[in-house]
Amino acid sequence: MSRALEVAALSGCWGLVSLLVLGCGSESNPNAGAGGSSGAASSAGSPATAGSAAGGGGGAGPVANAGSAGTAGNGSAGSSGSSSGSNSGGNGSAGSAADCTAITDECPMPTGLELACKQRFALGINYAWRDFGADFGGLSAWSKPGVAAGAAGYAADLSAMKAAGASLIRWWVFPDFRGDGVTFDASDDPTGLSATALADVAKALELAQQADVYLVPTIFSFDAFRPTTTTEGVTIRGMTGLVTSAARRAKLIANVVRPLAHAAAMSPHAARLAGWDIVNEPEWAIEPSGQNSQDFAPNEELDAVTLADMKALIAEAASALKEETPGAFTSVGWAAAKWSWAFDDLELDVNQPHIYGWVNEYWPYTKTPAELGYSADRPTIIGEVFLQAMPFSDRNNNDALGTILESWWSNGYAGAWPWQHFDQAANLPLLKAFADAKGCEAKF
Image (cartoon, rainbow, N blue to C red; front, side):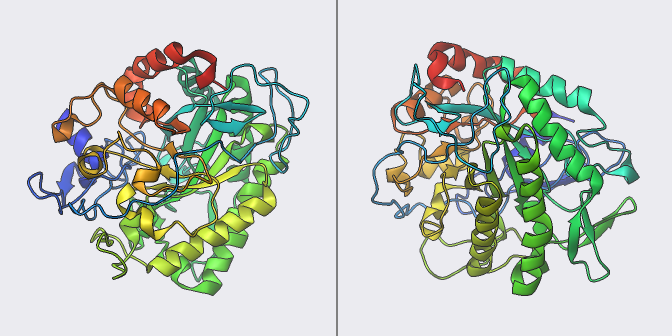
């Protein structure tokens, strides 16, 4: 695939279908389609192509009136505190927070994330998948193995990310329902997780232990809000109806979210679960609310839901996750600071905004978390930024990745996870340069 199509897929031009880019926002119109994160640079849904693609971001771009900044101070120390796991591998459970009273952190980073009895700048990376929608559960119809069946490849990837300085790995679980990980009944309601999905969760944590990294599984994504479709003999069920109905949403929580968290908690390597990302960039699938000048403008290819329904999904999932894995933090991968006003009442442990060129034009990376509307009672980690030498060059900003990371280090952020290993592995030295410069303060 050409570099132009790769950039289109990853910066928000919606979906690559038979290598056609559809619905891209105009570069000259700041209110046009904006940059979401997903979408592998390969033909959509083809069983012959590794890492089959889902659509990229999309939806409304920025409006010049930024007026959504919050009032709180900059990012403070994290409150999550996953159970400790040393490099040699303790078997602490993510079900309870670690007792760190007798442990001294030799090189704390004051605004960093608290994890494994350390407070550090949470430098990490988005995996975000090896095979989109198939890593956890596999996809037998397309001959896509999950983590357990393809362990050697996943282990090599995790080791490469660790060698580049990444301590936390954001890894997508069910970005849509194409894979074999979730079972459904005749009414398209989820009934549980497959045996392969449970085995893949266990293997992922085992491999994380071996690589000395911590995982942040991203459970869902806006991609799942497309209408139900059949591609190459595989039915990909849409998620919208499971969110808009309280009864069906309860089944989603009880039969997908809760057993996923329980499986992680029961792993002998549960300490390698740092936290959860409940849903990637949900803003692209939210209907206009009429509540703020920075309103939602969902991508037209999605079946959007109300703000209230999306917040109910997040709140109910967060509650279940805390019951099953109270030592793991909860977060949501927010598409942009543009919509920070809408979610400040949710009880989450970590703010996790994403930033691409279009976001940086109006909510620049140089602002503190408070100036972007994120409260000081929880740490703020940048969950996505291009793993490129100049991440915002698509919008004529040529600041280097190292400069951008340094700004976040100095302005109260608790970490950053560039996007992504899947197709930017050649740029891992950019991450390593920053990790090496910061030393133990950026390493768990």
